[in-house]
Length: 301
Image 1 (tube, rainbow, N blue to C red):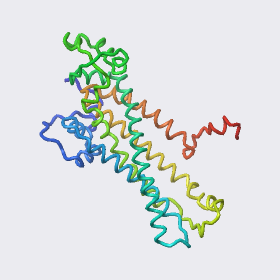
Image 2 (cartoon, rainbow, N blue to C red):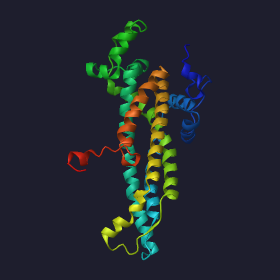
Image 3 (cartoon, helix red, strand yellow):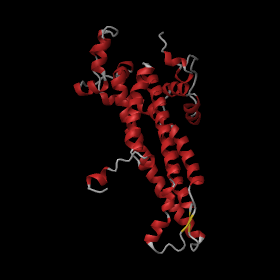
Image 4 (cartoon, rainbow, N blue to C red):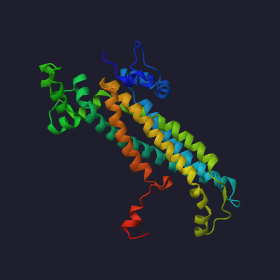
């Protein structure tokens, strides 16, 4: 078998040991961090939905705790302790629910872009359709998106006439469990969001609002929280690390389910990751790349 140069790096090496039985869910989550190539081989053998659910749950939980960490740095000398606990609990619940929705939508959007990159770099869905014998209706647009058109044109000498005559549908790829495998690639966000929580706990200043009767005064009083630019910039840098880390894991997940080229998958996914990082993180004011388009379009300075 042909071995790519990148596969000499341990994290990209293809597992050679015999697979016996699936690991428990939490062991799979841990292995995506310490031995991702083996983790995705195991997940592909027996796919499950519990791992991705835990990833989304923990990210939502940590988002709620971010709010608690910020709330802990705001003191009110005249407010009873019970009221503070109730306010903090309400703050946590709202952000926890928001986090569950936010991370689900974020991971869905990331997955969409990574899928497109994989289909254009190695025609992944076309390979999966042939490998898993997905055969239903034919659609030219779906064939193009899935890469099947280019796959059959480029590799028709390697495929049997029977396989070339089969008709595949892009939407049926989900039946192969590809989404379940992909969603395990977002485990790094749990680690990064946990580190972000620690940074918020130790990096923000503590502010006493007094009786906070004046809204204008309140806004000015809590401003030092947002003025800690190095704290918020560090959180953005951690998010960049999470995106790049997940990009590597996504490439391993795609390689496992498609048994295809590691280097081309990684290059395509890295291009998408750079676009995601630029549009969602580098344009934030914390990193100094904010274009302030709204003010410019409105004629402001």
